[in-house]
Image 1 (cartoon, rainbow, N blue to C red):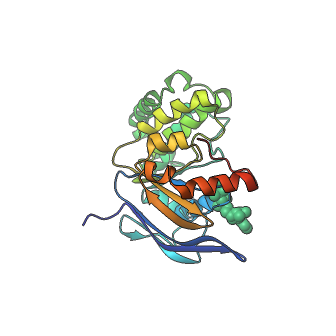
Image 2 (cartoon, rainbow, N blue to C red; image 1 turned 90 degrees about the horizontal axis):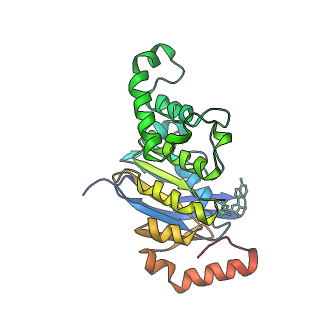
Length: 257
Ligand SMILES: Nc1ncnc2c1ncn2[C@@H]1O[C@H](COP(=O)(O)OP(=O)(O)OP(=O)(O)O)[C@@H](O)[C@H]1O
């Protein structure tokens, strides 16, 4: 049996009385394209925080390519191949698009903050950075600061940076959040460019993106994984309908058809 890229076993987390992650178990195979959906407050971001190492679970384990990373820092997990993008932008707005990509490449190469090493690797990293920018259609704005480019380009840059880190497993937290409908296709195109062998877990409210991107969809409700299957099986299930309809009536959930 081949080893899962990411294996989550019986993960649990409480905030006081509230069970935000309730005995969650799942696996991502190499090259997986999974989406995690669930109404507002279901616990999706809290789960991602535990996978990436921002939050410590109360119980259970996170295993990355056979290595138990449950007690490791977020930084050590990145070094082992766990990448993530953030729902709230994590870019350096005063630096250029290219400099943001270059910083990620330097980090991956282990030369960030070591100018004596950068000199010897600079040419190769610049070429790689230019290639990544071109792949994501960002070559026209490489010299602009992040604050000068469009919001859609900023979101693409986040995906480009995630790719620059060459993760084995990538957690994408709402990569199209806040984008107008007209710009969603460019994010979908960007997602399609991610390496086939990378296992990806996408947290997403936009059901169009989920349908286009994922081969497996899991539904999280009140911290519990309730349902998992193909996009069709899950998105057309009675449970998803009732959960989102109920949530929409009670708290204005953000699911978009
Ligand atoms: N640091 C915290 N302390 C206490 N409660 C928290 C904390 N962070 C989140 N929560 C609560 O945990 C629950 C799950 O929140 P979480 O943000 O993980 O949900 P979500 O599914 O990502 O929601 P959304 O789709 O709105 O981003 C919510 O009830 C939230 O209020």
